[in-house]
Image (cartoon, rainbow, N blue to C red; front, side):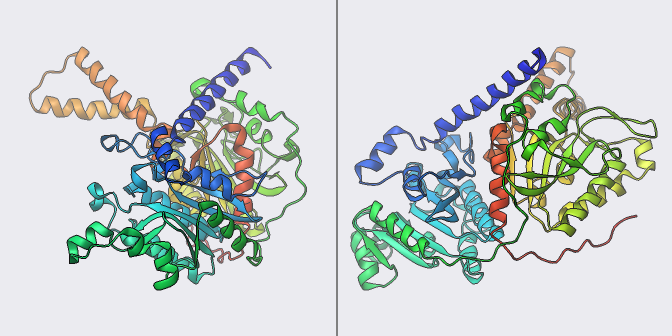
Amino acid sequence: MNISENKNEDWMKLLASETRQKLERIKLGGGKKSIEKQHSRNKLTARERIDFLIDKNTSFCEIGSFTGYQMYTEYGGCPSGGIVAGIGFVSNKRCVIIANDQTVKAGAWFPITAKKFLRMQEIALENNLPVIYLVDSAGVFLPMQDEIFPDKEHFGRAFYNNARMSAKGITQISAVLGACVAGGAYLPIMSDETLMVKGNGSIFLAGPYLVKAAIGEEVDAETLGGAVTHTEISGIADYKFDTEHECLEQVKRIFSKLGHQPKAGFDRIKSTLPKQKLESIYSVMSENNSKPYDVVKVIKSIVDDSEFDQFKEDYGKTIVCGYARIDGWAVGIVANQRLIVKSKKGEMQLGGVIYGDSADKAARFILNCNQKKIPLVFLQDVTGFMVGSRSEHSGITKDGAKLVQAVANSIVPKITIIIGNSYGAGNYAMCGKAYDPRFIYAWPSAKIAVMGGEQAAKTLLQIQVASLKAKGEEISTEKENELLSQINERYQKQTTPYYAAARLWVDEIIDPIATRMRIAEAIASANENPNNEEFKMGVFQV
């Protein structure tokens, strides 16, 4: 390894280390005192519950750990969106697990909590995965009720999804380990089976205080909606237990008896490690992604045996397409090439930019993968489509539209990894969040925005200066530079992967070395759903 690669590796490892440090703080939820309070009530934390539930010697693939990061600071924050969620194995069955974190505002639902919860249900629906809900929530966070209660993608959509998943035959099990109140009471009752812990678990549409205010009745929580009440009187719940451990053991027993389902049938052979060292993935990209690099080096560091069969290798070179295997799974890879390349026509093409020929090639490759039932992996480091009269006269918008249409109508699973830039329409064409990837992850080096920071800041400055001058204000060079600095700082903050992950534009920020594992897990999850719709393309502009 040369000096340049050493610097690259140090920079990327530092970014990954910063991500891990942030994550360790997030995992404390509402803080150590809140965790101690949970334990004093003979209750486990959300993460402890999941650790106990999943099979030994297996890992939990967490999703949305950075949800709510640096949001709702006026209310003390909402680490991980107030719920811990992901994919794991319970009794050798791959499933989605969603656990309220009672240490975060008593497990109350913020707007971002609902968004994360619905995202996890979406993952379950798309991949035909059974769901375990570990319920311990005070319900809607009342100070923000107008932002979480009535709309289509708000709190109530969770119960709509309960019904839709049940109709599709997706198993849902709820373990009520704490409070389950108001509208949230429908969640366990719309599940296939409901388990409760005596003394801590409770289900009611209105708690004791609200009951007294509404009808004057005085009643304690256990009598109103505790485990004994609902297993012996109302019949709402199916099992009651003295401890959480006993309750979670019963969840395992239920899952051990689930019948096996047909698979999608994506091709898989015995896995082999890349020939390149896994850590070589750290050394490819330069600090701040400031220099060209060969994306094929990234690909060969994650695919089996470092074997990659390029499609149309010498045509449309700013997008690299080809076939490979990841952990034995056959995949089609679409990746932005960051090298400056030269076409056969003699045109110099900038790396990271989508030209007409590369859009054409990628669209055709996506069609091929759909024809062959091969999952698609997108590696994003894109600054957008080529602009200017030459590109416009050559029909760049038409070519871009073909690529966007191919991505939108693709029916094979799409997994997106944002490794560098993700700007403008390039984000769409390379299967950004709006184009329904089954899973979308970001490296710590990712930047997501409508355009690059420098261009955006200067554009915003021009607008702001023009507005101030229209009001009769004189703008000195010093004042203009100060405004530019403020705009640039604000814009740069909004382009970070943490800003994106906080809002669930990406499912998780991952260490680059985990890319191979995350893709393999994504395809394995997608393989659980055999019901692929018919592939149709619609009208192409030719």
